[in-house]
Image (tube, rainbow, N blue to C red; front, side, top):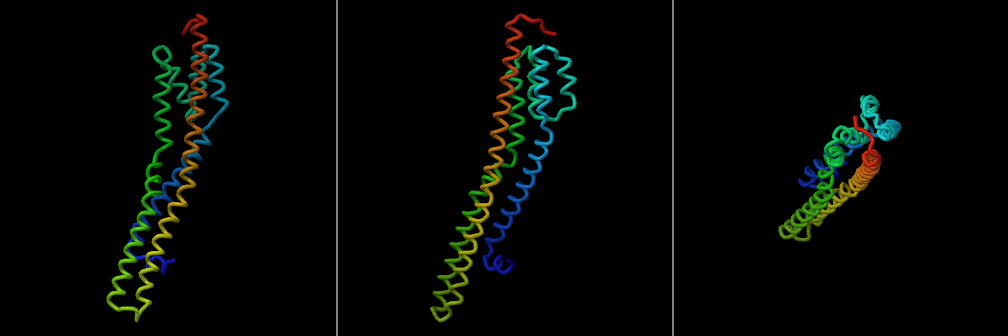
Amino acid sequence: MLHLFLSGGPVMYPLLACSVIVLTVIIERLMFWNRIDRMRNQAVVDDILELSRAGDWEAVRRRARDSRDYIVRILVSGILHRKFSMTKAMESAAADEIKRMRQYMTIMDTMITVAPLLGIFGTVIGIITSFDVLGTTGIEHPEAVTAGIAQALITTATGLGIAILTVFPYNYFNTRVEDAAQAVEKYATSLEIVYEKRIKGGQDES
């Protein structure tokens, strides 16, 4: 591996940096989503909707007090601002949560684009080196020419490899964000319907 790295020329160093950055982001996002999964508590979400249907806002506050579920935080934000604008409050809270979920995704997206370009850049440098050597030594020393060609192929393969291996976790994390956004929309809409029924039913607000 070290031999291949050194044979790839100077472009291998920025490619190494890209791979380290991508690996760091992937590990961080995996840990992030693992925390999100552990904090999810569907029972609390269901209880909040049921208590909201009954208009027991104090019970909602107590039930949600220790929850770290992102959906619970969004619903509670809407309930706290129900007399002003429940929808806008939940939209604002949801935007903050989705922003946290999309954190560092632009870095992965950038690496998917940059790594192959760096590989192509290394290819060009390798070919230029090969022609330069060919012009200097002629065909008497083909091993000098093939070194430049090897450099070109190594950087191309490395850049493509980084991009390909980044696409899969990138798409996975994007899918997780989309699923979370759909879940937020589902439960926020349910809360809005419950609250509107209470208002239209003329039930008192405490």
